Image 1: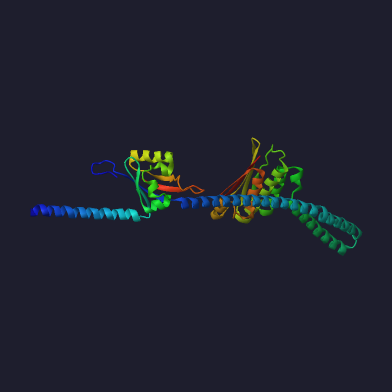
Image 2: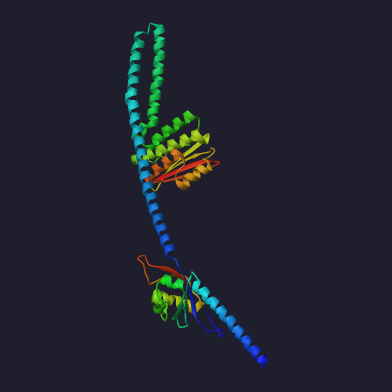
Length: 111
Length: 260
């Protein structure tokens, strides 16, 4: 019984440590001055940090559930997804289609 | 990002706004283009002014040459005739006759100097017989005055060129030989004028110390700092639509002008 109790206590401590690390990572993402956006495997946006929200000016309630094309248009989104599928990354300059100012709003995105 | 099973768990995108950077670059590029355009316009204006000054200088030289020859030259010629009359009248008075002879010799020298200055300013041969004859006359005079050995065979079938081309080639020849005497310390000069396919190629080659490399480099890269002489040559040739090529080193300087 003592052995089982010790093992359960160990698991609980380990879980707490993992939760603390997850909380730490979430804080890092949240406080980052770089705009960070997370999408699920199907490409639906599931999260954005404050810097991303400020850059694109779209509230979580509007953005969550949308695809990349809502931010940069279908043509550019296809280019990004093609690169991600082939090389697991994209590095390049994209033009936002939201919040567009007279000269166009240009953003550099890393996926 | 992949999970433990190696399947894609999510995509993470990191974005940076480069709008301001791009705007600044565009503004810089626009400003650069405007500056380039301004420099190009100023260069054209300066070139026009320079060519206008060279033309004015040519016209002024021609006018002064004519005035010296027609006015002062004629006055001295009249003086010489009066002196001849006086010499005739006082031929028995040996003292006066000797003095009159001395005055007549001074008058002759003055007359010769006036003619030389007038012809150097603008040789009448250039208008009357063309570049080849004027060049021949000038080269002979230069060799005599400077003691430089000049090899020059005038082209046989050059014929007459447009007035602007003849005066340009003559001024470049004049300027080049002046530079030889002033700077190169060369005792020998070769001059060639070749005509081929309606292109006249004039080459003036000396065997002196050459143009200092930094001076020539600045002239060839920026077109400036070559002294008034080289800049004047370049502007004259440019006005003519020709090409000026200057090569210089420790073995001497070669100037080649090609024009139609």
